[in-house]
Length: 159
Image (cartoon, rainbow, N blue to C red; front, side):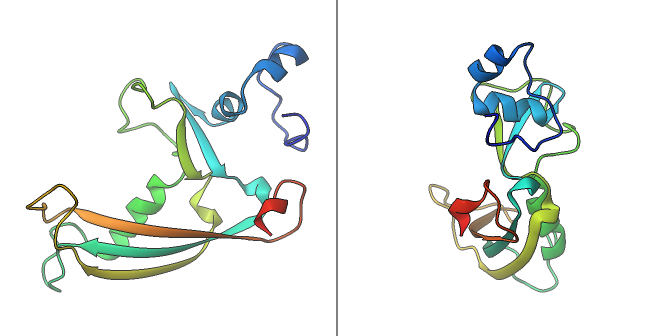
């Protein structure tokens, strides 16, 4: 762990070097992005020096131009981008993480890492294992592409 993120300003979350090596990588990352009782682990951090490109197929029920039962596309995309990043607060998540929710894995440290977005929308006919979808339901297929902005020892695998 020391070699991977040696340039970080944050200290390792341990009382001694031996304890630092015993802590798992995800526990360490979760402590860096702790929000109350929740530990978030972003898969893409700013220190990786990568640009994130999203290609989104957005299937939704409300294709009629005058009906916005599920919200318009820009508000839905803002909600999606917020869901892909480490939140600033835990409002709306509940008091404590449930089984399997610690740590929370998210795509991005911050949504400012998104440099390109392509969105295609179409009509959602039905969801898997659901006969009558709610007008607010959506089904998304998201293709994530990463491109390095500068070469570092952290991002060699993305080249």
